[in-house]
Image 1 (tube, rainbow, N blue to C red):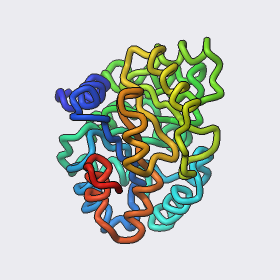
Image 2: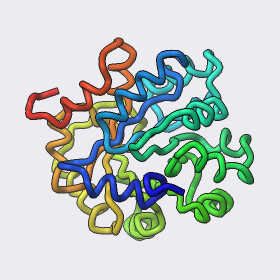
Image 3: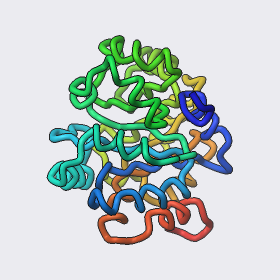
Length: 258
């Protein structure tokens, strides 16, 4: 397995970022299967990590923006197999994860999943509807390849469980900023920053804050508290408007307010 792929590659990309690391979420096949490769190239050039969403009929952790992008992609015939074929035909130097619900991975067949991820150059998975206690079978196919299974924590996660999940994950720790779904703007107050600080203190891996991140002001607010951010719904809205997703991501890093 090339050094650019795997949990260690994810961690290294975050730690090597010049400033807060930027993980960009895009829904596979959105706004259309034909346009997606160009979207992906633009995002890859601007982000430290790329999170590719596998379209699913019931994305329970996602708000309206990402739900809609999932529906568009599904109606266009995008599947996990399509994602693998696209990535196998691509050379992506930026570490890439798949974010998806458990059902498509289970339907693909866990016995083939690890090999499919490696062939596609995917460094790991984020599976929001899979509790760590139930993740043994999928970890058995990821661990031998050094692939990541990123763990999510939330403001409601009890302290003991927070410490446990922060130690159990690989790649990075995904600190959800809100108890709701993706997309809702989050005003990062002192309580939110205190929570993110608790996650950072509990983790040995880098910590990225996600859900509701859409402005440079928010990126600046978490700088020095956690290691970076995940941007999803705001980026999908940029793509939906036909704007340059790479330019939007670059603006989050620049001194010019996005």
